[in-house]
Length: 262
Image (cartoon, rainbow, N blue to C red; front, side, top):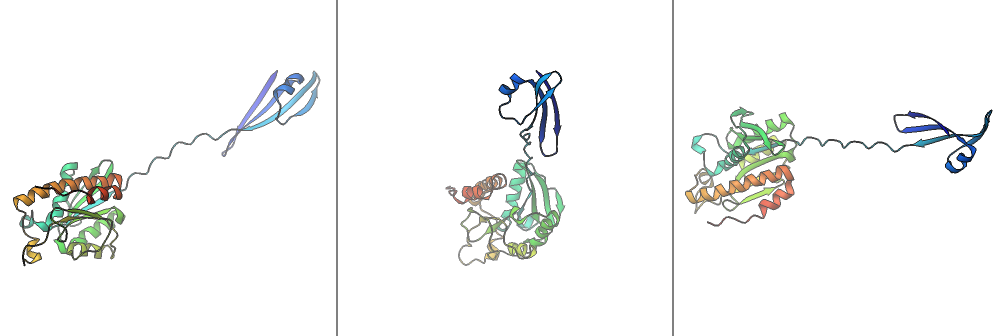
């Protein structure tokens, strides 16, 4: 039996073209279904068979996953030692907690904010503490979002909330400003959009008839500080889950968390 094969390929598929010479007895047993035609040569009765076979495409390698999109995490507060550790600046403390835990330096000043870049897991993050004073926070946040073209679903704002019990956390996918001037400014500089997640940290209501504006500038007492430190660690884990696993898992974790009993 003599076999001569020619192989050709195209961009879309590989085809194998074979011209095979068999004795007449072998042809009838070995080629039951292929296309074939008879031919007679000078040496005797032979069958000349031309067959075409299309091979399966080679498996394609898996496409690499696109790199994760960066997150912008903003904590709101007022700059300067006078306001450090006060209720209205608890957003700053959340950023400091994240930066310390993830090894992110906050030493630079950009976009009117203390600013740092780093990673949570393999996800790039930017941390910002606007230095514009609370009521103009949007000047800083709007500039960062515009410059880096960050999708609003990847912008988390952390701020104090009078309407939540002290040390309570609440993660929401979007919402209004709720009378918070820092959030009001941010929404203004994001073209009125309210479609960005926010982590609210409860600071409680002022006692008696105290003016809320005075209450938010008060420092925490020792017992409150102990509770707040626990809350900040809980907030850190909330942010990690948000960035690495998504909003739903993060909201389930933090919004169903039991309060600390001291």
